[in-house]
Length: 576
Image (cartoon, rainbow, N blue to C red; front, side):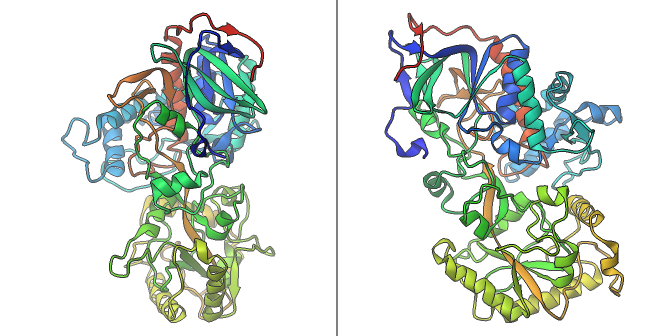
């Protein structure tokens, strides 16, 4: 249960007789990429570190992820002779993150100053941060030089080359779990004290209002951990705190694929310190399989890439509504269209429809499909969420049955009476676009990233599936749906990778109060603090890349911190 629903104090004023259960120079909360890199660099610089992790296993959402990293100005780029301009990079992020504020001639490109400062620090330090982790053998990566940015905009003057992914000991492309395991091994080698199953519920402050430690529960024991230099919150967002998502996001999401422990435990602590919260209605958006999210499945993976070519997505009226190949974050925004005349969100739930060919050709097969959240079952397998109908009318009935089963969670979505006939019209129109090789409604397949993802998809597929196909695919993302069933479908809903709201931080990663002053002894990075990304998901790896960079920056500033005064408090054993 989140502390949002408790009345325990989240800020504790020190008593002279407090007995600390343990102490270190740095106390880090969270063992995802943000916390691990902060701890690794702090220990590498000579600081003692205690890490506290709420879960019984390390890694949080990072361990569930693909682990890709957006690292500007990295050594692999430079080795290829690709030297990126800092101002071009910041202009690109401003253009996609704050498009209504973007001003090319403004010194900060229209960005709020704190966002500009963080992005500048990111660019200045990302390459060195990655290189140092590699030197420490805390991370091994593979450069994917051809991976393009998520938006085609003129401001992005180097749309390829920033992306690296974890690499395993055999030199193969790996994932977040592998990267976290390597970091945990390095933490152990550096002597970092990692305590699992420890839930932090308060910070301790001294008479000078400096943060000097934390309090939390270690199983049934209440414990106090002193931080001589700084406390670092590097924990997750509030994806799985339903009261918080209802309050801050207006019920727009049905769930997310963040670790189930991401319940916003830092929020009441921040509130107790009087810290203003920012970006609370924004998130790293991603479509999710509706019924899987409702089931609370901890293995839920976002639908990063809507696989297939002879497929389309429609709303409750049966009409096609968006480019199905737009990347996940931007695609999710189509769920939020508000119709003021009908007073509804007509696209809140979306219905994927495909034919037998698409189902057979693009069924889940292998690592890339797993990390892309492909919802099409492997050939010969089934899924409780993947529906089949002999005709479009029968598939529509299956959709309607599922909506009725979960009516309270459907956001008022019911299929229109003419859904099946409108769907047929939508398919006919789509098929015309597929035959001409150009989507005149939503421009599907016309960006570099859409073509790249489709290329990855098609590399995995058996070539003989299309042996008798007379249709020439001018655009590989488009293929006509069959005039005959069966047809298959699934219901998608808006979800998140995680939230991106919380207190602001400065370029040193110090958490700021309402007067923009650093809270002494308190640092923050990761999804528990406000993201500098505005409305955007900058590109693939845009959480891991900044967080490994910010951990590097935070550590350098933390080790230079003076020791905080705590009076005559003693270090003692467990107390209650």
